[in-house]
Image 1: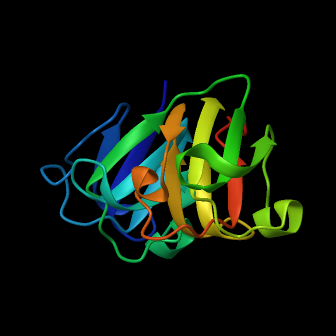
Image 2: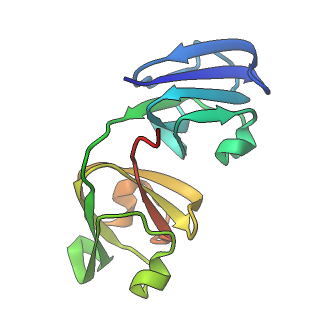
Length: 174
């Protein structure tokens, strides 16, 4: 079970909306989002309705303004609660359709280039657990939620290019 509260103003002020499950359209509950409190669970926020646009991964904690969750603006128009799993495993490939060099991960990786000597990931196969892929090292840049399934090309996870800098498992930190 998860709980997230969206506030229209910075510092947890103004109108607010409490959410405990996936919501494809938050527009009816608030006009903008300038602060967030995550009481439980891990969440992926989207700047557009129906889980589209820039994605922002949040875990338990307080985010008094949108820069705290690496937001580009105060738009949050959909969200989903990310399910937890005990184990995580994924395969990364340097070419489309699971071809070329393959590397397997079972833990977070802050810099894919240092660990595997390639900075592009063109296809993935998430075998267990949910992951967040960041386009830059050290968990920075655009974020993409990866659920268990095959991603035959980088467009399958919503990316504009094959940049992949770091990967983080979705785990309950508390």
